[in-house]
Image (cartoon, rainbow, N blue to C red; front, side, top):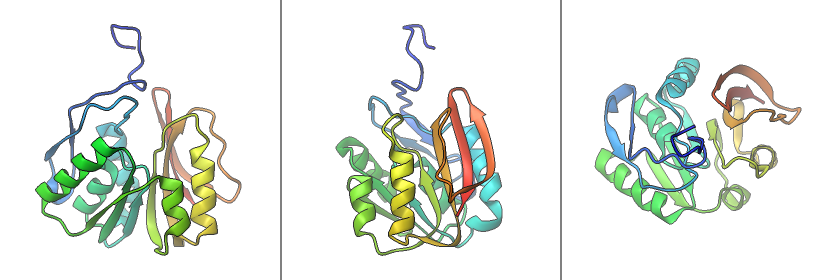
Length: 191
């Protein structure tokens, strides 16, 4: 809780996110002040990318609820061949576009769209999917179902999920690794 009695998950306004590894290590990227934004903390990202280290080089990635883009851009920084960042919030889309331009990368593709609608029209397949949607809206299960139904996952694909405590995963997913940070549960799952 902060001094106003609000939890950090309610209204986190970081100002900047830091790429923690790879070719853009220590680069700080601006983030707009947007209510309900929950950038994945550095230590959680470090853990995640330690888990992904054997598979991230050359991987095609999807950052479905991109927000700050910290997960997808971290993946490219660490050797992923591509990332599609899907985001609908205009302020976040504009900042993501600026950050991609600043990093001068062609490996990141920004799609302004509502995530579930985008999945329904997607024809690409991915090795790694980052799934960190707004909490309490049932978006994890809906997103996982569409990823599966629309054949968006390559064989042996991994899905990183960040969610509120108590989330039940669809039965077709197997948890490979998991952790907890405050009220947030994070896990790496396979299909």
